[in-house]
Amino acid sequence: MAQILVDHLTFAYEGSFDNIFEDVSFSVDTNWKLGFLGRNGKGKTTFLNLLLGKYEYSGSIVTSAAFDYFPYPAAQGQMQLPAADLMEKWKAGCELWRVLIELDQLRGNAEILYRPFHTLSPGERTKVMLAVLFSGENDFLLIDEPTNHLDQASRENVKDYLSSKKGFILVSHDRDLLDACTDHVLVLNRKSIDVQTGNFSVWWENKQSRDQFARAENEKHLKEIGKLKRSAARNAQWADRNERTKIGFDPVKEHDRSKDTRAYIGAKTKKLQSRVSQMQKRIEREIEEKEGLLADLEEPVDLKLAPLRHHRERLIHIRELSAGYEGSARPAFSHLTFDLTQGERVALHGENGCGKSTLIKLILQKAGFGQAARETCGLPERNGAGAGFPVARSGACEVAAGLVISYIDQDTSMLKGSIQAFCRAHGLDESLFCAILRQLDMERVQFLKNMEDYSEGQKKKVLIAASLLTPAHLYIWDEPLNYIDVFSRMQIEKLLLTYQPTMLFVEHDVRFREQIATKTVTF
Image 1 (spheres, helix red, strand yellow):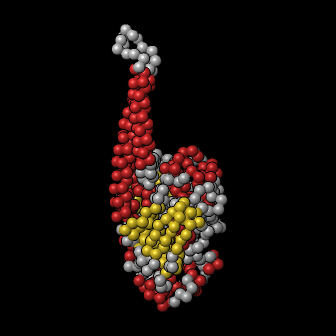
Image 2: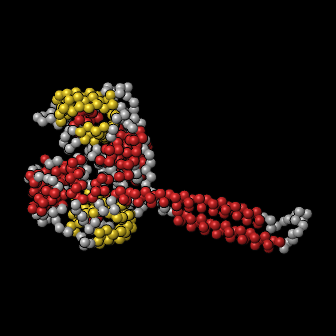
Image 3: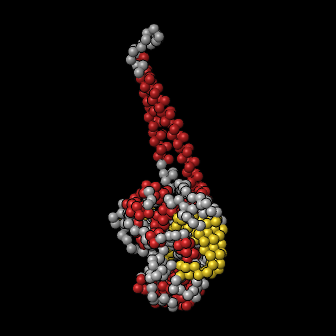
């Protein structure tokens, strides 16, 4: 067991407009199961890279611990190799028998170590990498969002596995995973850093209590400041009025006054002015005590949506549908039946590779998306005569005529260039678009960067903002919350429950799906 002591850490990327960390100090224990929380772009992955010694920084990070990081890199040229050949490249001194033990705990089959890495599903890749990661001894492990793109069964495997381990930092926005697997939290707040005992729910309850206390204290200080300002203004007015009576008087009305009275009036004025000065100092003290009270307060702005009303009640009709890809003998799914009517929010649920995204792309095609729209939505390009696009092999897939769809794809790789160019290409009002990004807690300084330099969470927010700005009959979101921070997830949940748009979505965040879905279609 060792400690990681962070003292006066300051770091900014070269050419960046702002510091990621500024004079930060805290300590954590390497025996903890540490959940790492914070808004997108706050520096969670950056901090892990600082621990790994990848960047220069000022201040100090002192520890005797050795670190290892998930996910391991797999270059394009290595994707043809089996994981058994990649293990030594990932973790020096890695022993196969230890990996097999960890893989068994993850309920993974040993044969996946010997298949080409590119043939493994996202869940299988995660299992292999975690097995290699935990096969060492005495390392403090840095685990960066292990459940993105994983189906529910794979998430449960990872959750059960990590809950039996210790000695790691887990970066995740999955509330269910954080509750099950952590006993401490490290939180990057707006202006400070917290280290607390307990899981996500314990921290969130404490935070809500602290925020409520901060609001009450802020209100108390504001009232006191207002009262002092009124008193100071009143005393200043009295002092001025009193001072003006020093010279000149009406001997008829003020027959009991003489020239000697000036000294008395001057002393009285001085006393009133002294009282005003004391009040000003009290006001300054109250303002100083008030400063910082709301610095870490999370008060997400309520987002808005403008869903359209279609003339037909039933928007999508699926009956005994089987579909697959041209050139593939095996269907992606078979005998699927469901309807989607206005006002419903239908969740597509099932394992990776069961055909959820295939169905979405088929619906998009049926809705009349052209090639430009396909590229915008991240659909695969044509290879030859229509190859690479899903096709219905049997059954019915009917989409209401004139249906306007707002789509979020799970892939963000198409996001390049400036915000201005993105808005022009998609016909979006730039000022409104940036306003929504600000409401999703993106700093204005990010608008000056190219989107390829954004974090994955920030890229997802670009797609979400574009969808929210597009009035539509139907919102189709394919894994919209990958990489999205906890606060924004709650913000989006509130939006969807308030405006109740018609939706078809894929999302493996259990709590989001339970909150939002009015119906679940299981593949």
